[in-house]
Image (tube, rainbow, N blue to C red):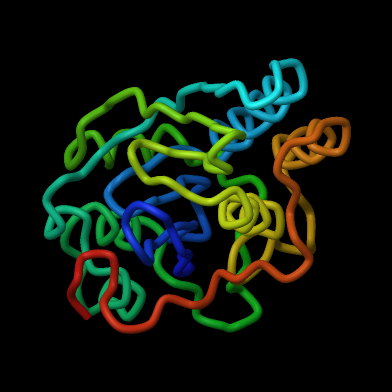
Length: 210
């Protein structure tokens, strides 16, 4: 489930996994695969280690933007099976919410459904290169125009590290998460805090409905 996180540029934003059978992440109206996020975190950490003090470092994530909120879909409605419109609804038509609480765990092998996920999102979103930049002097990291204080970005990293709200199934992390953590341990980059401030998303779903 996506959680609410604080941003410097847009107030409270939504970030996270939205269906346990895919490794696609959402950040408001942006979507990108978790391994690409982890790779860029490692790149920024490595860049920060080798850069001059205070120098900005940057990278990019290939992903999609869905500008129309109705085309994103209603997460809560999709989970309940009551509103399967938009992209999120399409994922729940393909992979319905599990029938038991025990089944609600993020699949560490979600990348096996990548081709199907890409086919679905291509009908709703626009493929684009999403810039990511770290500014040590300002203490910020930005993703596609969403600016986070470095401690808030640490919380996004921690969310992916633990597999979101339900956590990784059997606490098994994908290789790309393990590699990201290995890179962070050998750098001065962002590190997952023990108690990230992200909280369950209350009120409206990412579509603003439900």
